[in-house]
Image (cartoon, rainbow, N blue to C red; front, top):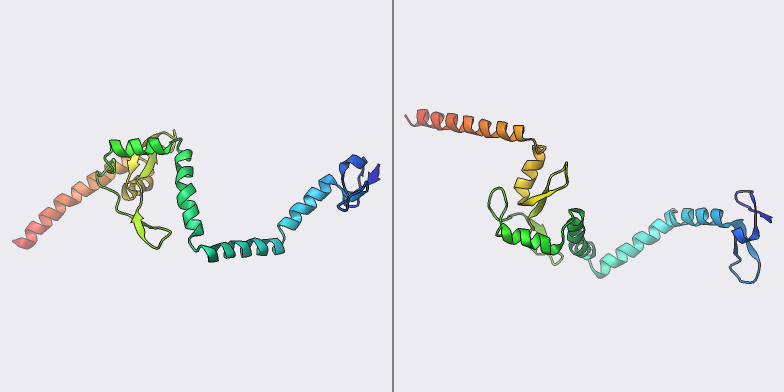
Length: 179
């Protein structure tokens, strides 16, 4: 039995690491305290600086490292979050003929690629926020439109009647100006 120098608790010898230099000597603080101590060391400012330097070196070698990593794993993670595979996504895309399920147009939003080129963003996976069920693929505009209306059908109905009301008014106002 031995008293830990950190927590002051009397513990069995087996609850201490063997000394770094080998032999049968044991460390002065118990395994639990050593683990806590190692975690504290890892999160010190010095370690943060070291990790930042490693990241900067990685970016010097390949300035597009994080973009490439996200491009590779980000899409897979998104599909996994929706319970889809790449094949499921491609089948939905083929069924919709590569067009948005709402407006029937292809995606037009561009995203930056790793090689300083821009490419068209893939269609977004639309899902019901209450049930989590996947509904289809939408362009960015339609997907954000649904999100901004909180998927509330009344808001959509009000927006439609508002547009129709002002469309008639606009046509009438145009006729007055032309007369």
